[in-house]
Image (cartoon, rainbow, N blue to C red; front, top):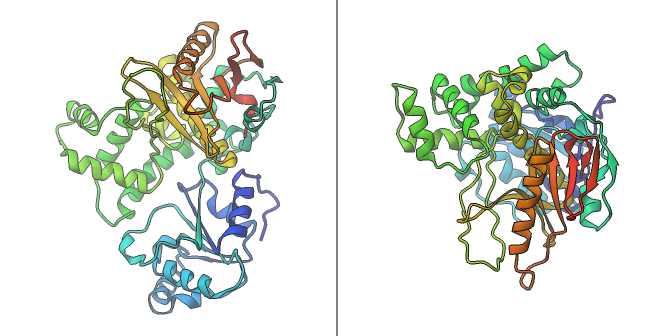
Length: 426
């Protein structure tokens, strides 16, 4: 079933590994990020539950005889499985009784409407894989000369970057990592991102749990969220911001329900706080940092394009941070790690901490570039590194300033790495 034009993804290897370890793999993530296409590369049979010509029959069969839908060559792909959550327990029952692994792949762009339908969690039988829009390495916009895996293994950094201009980076932000946007003209690409946001507002936020939600308010909320991305603002701050520009106010509980729906369809992916062992007594802030799963959602919500970003470098920097976090999360999945944010009561922050499950971690500051910003980022990294109690946890594997532009990746005299995003990979 493989597509000869398929562009390889980091998730390809992760899916193969999970199918070797579990009876069923659930691939989840936002619409248009490539879940189905990735699954099709390895699936031997498939059911598209949202096929309008067969959807009614499929859902009726799922209600009365779900096991019949699961019959077929394996791995068998059940696309948009959340439309028929009865399949979960049916698959679990089959996996319990079949020998071997890798029987089913479920893909979904939303969590099920009613989790109570799932009478068994799937522990020990099922595996989870989250896919995001493409990183620059996957889309072909990074040359991959600097490997994060190599840095964790202690190898020296050295690499020539594509030396992309700020205008090129601005375009990458507005285009996003959607596979369907690659190779299209700039106007068409930007229109796709606008259409994505419109679909969120008009349909997806209501379809996720069959609760009718206000499309105009959703659009204002996305615009508000875009203004606060990269910050640790509470829901009350978002509510106050929305109330200041809108006569129609929403309660904090209603706003929280909108935000929950956006997370269920993988539009928002906030970043948890990192909690290291420190020598100092500074209180560590535990609030999540606000992020979209892809920077193009922010630019489309704000109604801005590459030229607007070039004229507003402050906004450019904030949205570049969203793209950098997206890429670090994709690379972190390949390395077996998660991405966190650090902030303490003394005002010391670190934009991203890539923490592997083996305890190794790297501290990363995200900057557009330029000597002043790089110096500022390096200083913050050194201050945080000096605070870490290395008698209770490992010292950082590396300190990195990840930049938007630059001709080379190199190590500064103070040991801090400077790496343009256009030469980074997992």
